[in-house]
Image (cartoon, rainbow, N blue to C red; front, side, top):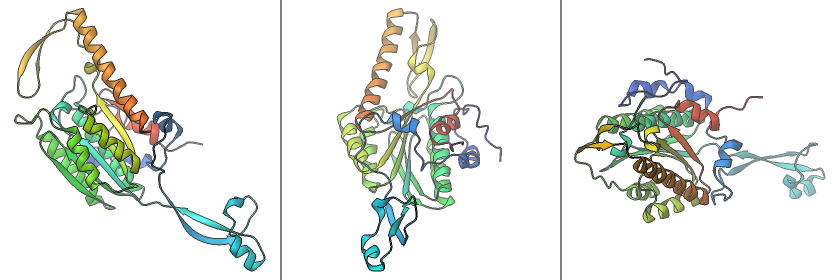
Length: 313
């Protein structure tokens, strides 16, 4: 099995299963349970209603200098005649669901890899890291026509099943008979059905269709009861048309020519993409959901390391 080069972008039009499995080694450097300040800032000024992991009572012991006086157990203190304090243990196990978009809109890339491949690499790193942290890992992989659910389990088999489904859906692209209006809202509806309160969700997509009213409502409900993190996949050519010329383009089922020499067209194209990105950013900020921008020309590990890397002292 070839080890992944974590310092370079993902490559290719299709995700290779052996490469996704090999990402388990660099994933050991990521700690999903630790949200650093940079990630918190992405959530915007409005905080989500979700309050994170709970804490469980563990034991009572004698008070020691430096203990928080708010945790003093007054009943035990009164009974024994000496100060005692409560100790709590953070809830470590939680369901982690990695949601991966493999619709036709993700089957696009201009240099290193397609967005669908980038999504697979991000999902693999997140899934392996969650398993290393002792969490139960599952997910949902979807395209324009269908979806596949993976029940959360604390086992390598669960991660391998998720990666296998990603590879399978990815290898089927592009879908010639796909419903091009593949419902993002429909996927979120399925996600709400299988997600339990307190779960940690990583939604990896290009978020086409996220501005629909139905999708907004589902995102609102998910953000209330889960720890939701959005990872938006993009390609540099999506934000700016290539230099002036005539190009053959396809959506997977139809082919046409694109003339990029018109300055007004280029400006209009750029502005439209900026408006779409701003709308998504504002919608998620209102929900207290951090948005990570992932690009096909950047290493996926580098992005995750910025927000989930181990803190160096």
